[in-house]
Length: 113
Length: 111
Image (cartoon, rainbow over all chains, first blue to last red; front, side, top):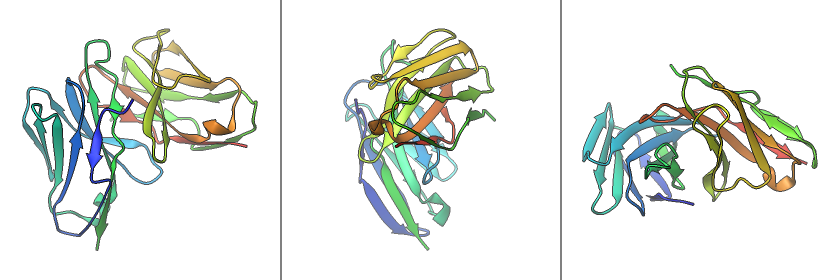
């Protein structure tokens, strides 16, 4: 079952610009996480935001969470060619599934030099 | 750093073969997971485990089984491989309340 839906599905920007990706989900969550995947590789955890948090920063990454709208956004500032990858949001929910991540389809980000 | 190691990056097997995909993590995590990733379908959870000898079905367990005899090792078994099991398989582990650490993935082709 897919919980998160990323938007847009693909994004292409120039190096140095900011990239914003959005994620919407359907049910109440414990936390929401963002991951990056370079082509043909495993996923790398970027940032985790808990349901009682509204914003979180990590280096050039900024994540917001709006639980009333069931949505999150990932902002990458001053993009670099190395940021080219697919980005996924994922959520955990409920006591039984507290450690089980449900992923969205991902946003394919391309940074043009 | 937590490391999750998958035994093979690429694997080619024949239809009907029994296939073992191995995953080992080195940080004493309780939770381990197997996903498959397919174009247009995203990541789908096959099985997961909260502890040694415990296993829970994910969203698409049919045709698969798992084994967790030791805390650090979580094996995915394809009982009789079929061509529709050609996919990228991703193993992950996590401690309570933290993000997952993924392995590099195994790209399995069943011919």
